[in-house]
Amino acid sequence: MTDVVLPDNAALLLIDLQRGIDDASWGRRNNPELEANIARLLAAWRKTARMLFHVRHDSTEPQSTYRPGQPGNDFKPEAQPRRGEMVIAKQTNSAFVGTDLDPLLRGAGIDTLVIGGVITNNSVEATVRMAGNLGYTVYLLADGCATVDKKDLNGRLWPAEDVHALSLANMDGEYATVVATAEILQALPTTA
Image (cartoon, rainbow, N blue to C red; front, side, top):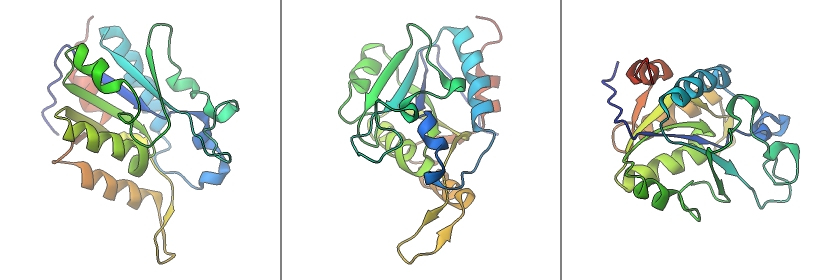
């Protein structure tokens, strides 16, 4: 277990937890506990009154399951923003590109982020890498993100579990500290 230290102004950043990921076109996904882990963390996080950012992918690709104006663009029930919670709309893989996320975080004095969402090796990894490069302390939820089976350039199909594990390994250390949801829950105060 890692020693998780969450300053009072740490922010939770949930990436692309939208219904579009449930479309069969994505293929098989790992981490069936993703939504339950996010729901537990979200409930505890809200009790602390810490900042929370929901990132929504508004795809510009015509065939995307994340395209605005269709059900896939809606947030999953377990990650539904409440009134007053920040929603950051993005059109690229990184939550920092083309958005006001970085100025909002810096303006609030936030330098520590807890990040979860989908897809581990795409939008999550792009956002985590950029956050690390921008100087944020990042805790990445290993069991609070997920991916799908992926073919490599040789046509080999890699199971989502392997893609997920390798992506986490790529980010751990240099860009983030990979942790379990339970570790973040343990680091949160029990009373608000």
